[in-house]
Length: 378
Image (cartoon, rainbow, N blue to C red):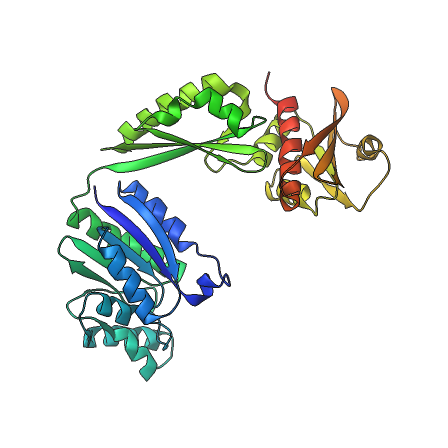
């Protein structure tokens, strides 16, 4: 099984001016191909530093994929850096220049001399035509190892990855297996408690099982390697069934399902409507409920403060109402939750000791889970 590393290139990423989404996308697709990902890195637009990290990485891994630095300006150094890393010059490819000229002409523009930089790639490299942008990509082979340079624009990178790079990797490394993953979402149980229930599953080698905590929600990631999607699905299904038997109703969803969407679906299934009220959450709960786009949610209010929370929530006047108030105190944050349904009225208090900036997300998840449990099917 080949190994891979991802290097994103761009000073704007290094300085935090833009968020790198390319690494996550590449990692998921390489994982699906059954390629081991050793690490990812980000480096600024400096030719010597890029060349140095490429040489270092090439010594330990089979596949290097870079994104960024293929534009027409002086601070787009990837072509020269790759050439330096393998001790070769760059060479001008007239066919690449012609592709750039023709693409610019389709938009009624004339390619400038600075864009001619994009027609230079390392000597002997395999050019990758880019029909969705002006920056040609390329592959440099070093024995059984390779460096694949892709554009930094996410849509261009994704297109070339699917249509050029993945077919190349499948053929070059005779890839036959694949990796699939499934994520189970758990609420109402802490990470350490979940670990007590599924710790033995975390010791498995295939599928592998891992936990990740996110503000009152814990993800259980099940990842299987196999020669076919069907075999991988079967491996995952067995572990998922075991996890569900042990954790029961604490598991509320899988993969892209959200707590708010699942909860509103249950509210709607009972024929109820929901209104919400929050104090001190800066819109966290209201925005998430609105984004779930379920007609049973009738909207809500964000108030600076108010009297008794249960009284305020009752005034929302719908089948179901959820009220939250964050109460920061020294060293911790307290949360009041008022929950009103046709079956009950309840006021509860909860304590949070994490970072204050994470308190609104924790509060929303804690409250939504209470409503989920109240509205779950019998």
